[in-house]
Length: 148
Image (cartoon, rainbow, N blue to C red; front, side, top):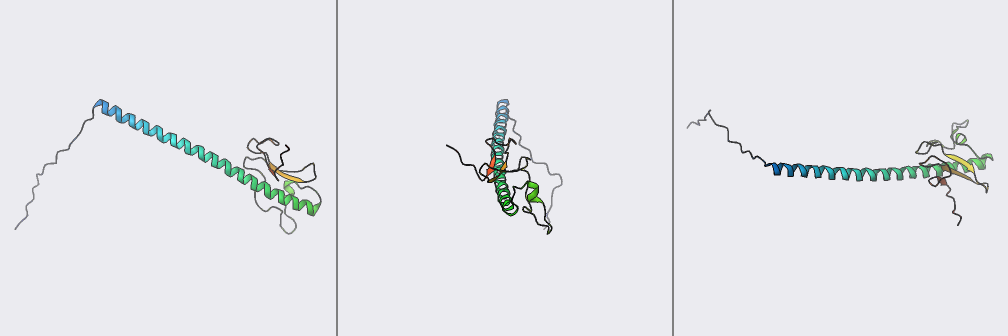
């Protein structure tokens, strides 16, 4: 028994559907709406990322201010004077520093400040996002008590 195949096979007919003008307009409108919704969602996501980023910067700022304050207090007890940032990052003859790593600047590029308070204590502060000291967005460690 032999199997015979035909070499003159015809391509199967293709079914094409032509959309009417109103169907094409409706489909284009649906695509535009989908794109606008996607853009709106991306905008919301970017806004959330900005808030998260700001929270992370503030958290880093508080942590660094706390470290600077603690080491500045230790320096002051050991040396009898309020240190500068340079004092805390300088290495002694054994190659050690009060602060080995971390930033001298807050997340917004402003140097942290160490200063004595009126009651002979010290505080470490960051000027915050506005980069101006003694404004509402400053991070101060230890936190200042509100006078009511």
